[in-house]
Image 1 (cartoon, rainbow, N blue to C red):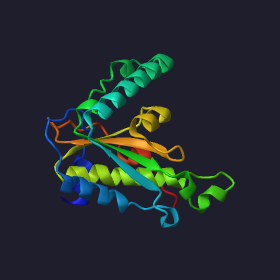
Image 2 (cartoon, one colour):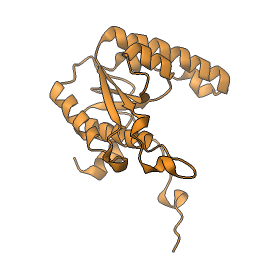
Image 3 (cartoon, rainbow, N blue to C red):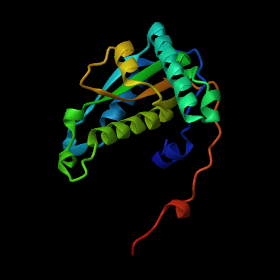
Length: 190
């Protein structure tokens, strides 16, 4: 699959088939993540692959409690109706961990950056695109409490869960969301 085609046709998947994801596909997806750029090539990511059904159900329950809390605090109606059952239905969850100790020189700027988060975000994007190229559906999920992810997935306290990537065979294709045009979001300085 052409890179630009993959970028333009990838969609977030919220409905998965009960079909096992092959280990060789998982390996290629994780390998693609490892090729993401990072400050000073520190590669600040780690991946925890979760296939265990009980673990996925525990994460779903914790994320559901967080979703309800956020819906109440924000007052956003869409959040009240947002169905996150895909967290327990996706055959694979991958927790993407970032290591704050592996920041680049941007940590010394007057307004310090968070290069490790940005690098891990690039790794997530590579995973999503690789999954699409492998014929899998995927979704980047971030509405969870760090303490829940640490406890349920057994994550170390010195790492930050940047997101959880859901992977599996899509039950159906999602429609294309509206995107802003290049003209709407770009300003040139000539």
